Image (tube, rainbow, N blue to C red):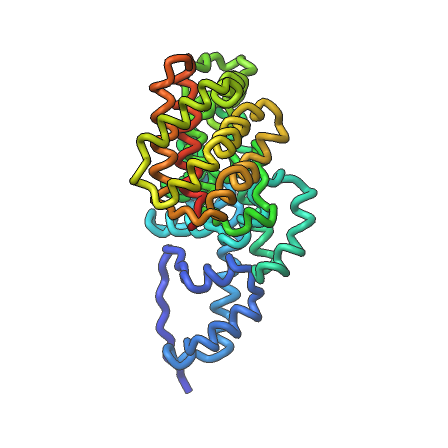
Length: 364
């Protein structure tokens, strides 16, 4: 008795996106096979359970071999062992470095160290994300941080160059690196309503306006010990922010500022009376946040302070977002009409970023 067997030989590495997702999500081969069976793949393809098991194991072996290349994506592009089309290479990299919102919120702003890694068991239980996936995501964050932390220039560009990520994912990683480097507090109960996207939005504003890279004044000296341009806040700028305190310490300036804002907004705000009554407290809160940013602890507590000093008072008085926007725009702009104030450029650099962050943090 003879049997006929059709054989096809090729050198292109086949990537099943669904199996890749199961591998990335941390499922074992056994669990992955069970999930594939549940999806109805046996009925769709006419394959046997044994063939499905073998197919899944084969894919998992391939992904394990590819993983060391995914740790340094340019190596994946230049290696010759796996014949993978460029579009598939991009997919492998992008999905390997993708992360879960629930996971990143648990580690955002924490030091990417062994101490934090020990908490991954608890994070896995809390989020429902497999421990293996948590470890992959954490290790990715740490790997990107380690590669770019000593580099000069644009944080986003450095991440894209060394990890070949899309613009959006590179910007997300820039936010993660920036928060880890500056240790911003994001885990307090009063901040739980904020999403990773909210924090990433603020990170991008701060990178663009409050870092050394924002002013472009750092010398291009490879031996310089100066801080990394996009990762570190501009310490001179933070020191100068103390000068803004005159806006609330000088009673005449504070009264004139209030008068200018109230005159401009009378009849335009639904919460005008609440704004007028609380103006000085709000102004003191915003200016005092600036004046305290010379201390590392106050830098870490920036978002806690913004919520406590501005978001919560406005929310308790039921300010709609449109009124918050009107107020912040006028509050920022009217300082230019204060004849006794001599720090307009500093004010604009501070409030331009703060206004954008506050509008993002304010969920009415």
